[in-house]
Length: 246
Ligand SMILES: NC(=O)c1ccc[n+]([C@@H]2O[C@H](COP(=O)([O-])OP(=O)(O)OC[C@H]3O[C@@H](n4cnc5c(N)ncnc54)[C@H](OP(=O)(O)O)[C@@H]3O)[C@@H](O)[C@H]2O)c1
Image 1 (tube, rainbow, N blue to C red):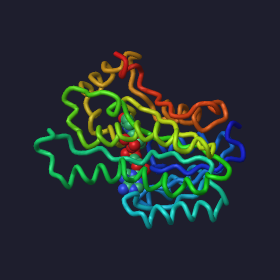
Image 2: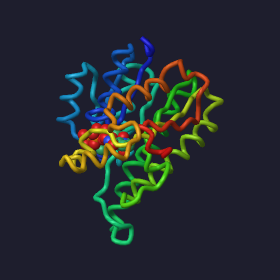
Image 3: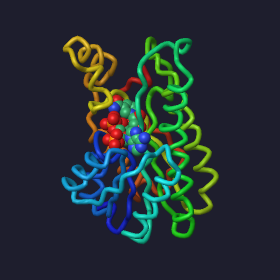
């Protein structure tokens, strides 16, 4: 029970990595709230996990404030924030990318993390806390034919903000760490893993010889949320079967 007595808010908790994290956190004794945009999907996940789901669009400050407020009303505190919600853009070269598509990805994947962090930090300033940002290998290095520049930009910025926030908020005993997954099997990557050939190509990218599961990433998030990492802040951990070091 590594998270006994802790309260965690997980963005993007309705599916994929966020849902796996919510399940592991609850099994480790945390009181968990999940959030997502689609309320139907969120409530289904919430029922399955036995935790409350508070819907909100990460692009709207008012929604973010409402989700954080409802979590506070329900549990009276927030000890752990997992900044996990994200979208993947339509793949296209930079010079063909319409500005509104660029802006949408930055709004969800970067400004959204700013909104949640800004809203939660005042509730952590007295008692301390943990923030775990979910970035990506795409924020660590470039990949040939990746062609998702807005995504790479947001994920690289989140890595840097992890370090900046770690230094800025250490005096309040708020630790800020980051995980960088490789390819993980979720709804986000489903369109890229449809054929056997696509899947074989994705597997071949990873020196460990397989793509990741949501649990692979959730377990690393658990480490940063638990006391096992009590002297770790500003860390950026690739969880990627070795992709980032090859
Ligand atoms: N899968 C991978 O290979 C991979 C690799 C590296 C990094 N990551 C990162 O890991 C995180 C989770 O990815 P995943 O693969 O688990 O994705 P996913 O299965 O597509 O889930 C994305 C989650 O984000 C939420 N979300 C999206 N737009 C939102 C919005 N405007 N407002 C509120 N919530 C919103 C979704 O809610 P709805 O269900 O309501 O849409 C959903 O809960 C993302 O940050 C992603 O960039 C994933």
